[in-house]
Length: 275
Image (cartoon, rainbow, N blue to C red; front, side, top):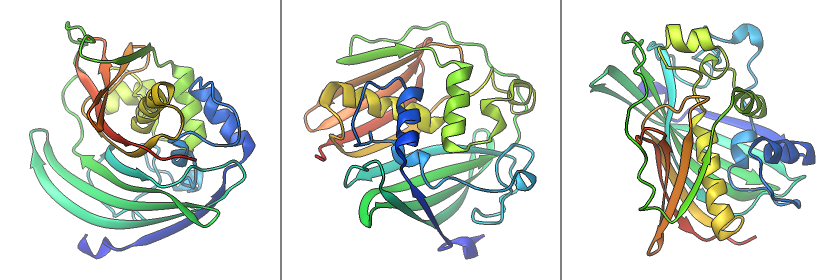
């Protein structure tokens, strides 16, 4: 699969006022105006495979842009993002995506394939966001889903805190915003019986968006220059999710914690970008 390295995809879009309004409504943002919050780029230049071209998991069939990895389960493992400039409603968007690296590894859960993709998002010709996205492919799940743990999140170490319960409606809305048809986000029998999750799985970029929103509520809009996150455990619809953050010198540490205390997503950020 090394011959897939360097493969490029260029997409175009427009950040319409309607999309911006629906994004804000989905995450219950109180922001107004024409300047979009950080994280809006995940709702732009979306996959546009025909319904007939979807695989059994709801993702577009592999082999068009992404390599034809045979492992059945696909997850968005992490991203490292640099914010260069805010995106304004009405901006013409171009995203250039390049497969940067493919690595095969053996993990505790079996064989793994990691695919790194570099994305550059431009708004009206100016570089707005650059991102290294890592996708991991895994073997089929064999174990039954584990029940929630019995611990509790330790929130005393955090300066910022917000709690929410991701609903099935929230997952549906974000899937619609991002044209994401992965069945783990809306098809409960598939999520629990095939991929062996405890319930519907909250999207990784949705949790990352909520962490960005937490930082914006505390620091102001579009104040981060960089943001990186790594998924560590699945978050399940209907279960409490605790968003937390703290400032440590020039660094900002963020996390999404489950109600049982496990870290669902860890993140680091640095400020600041101004409009």
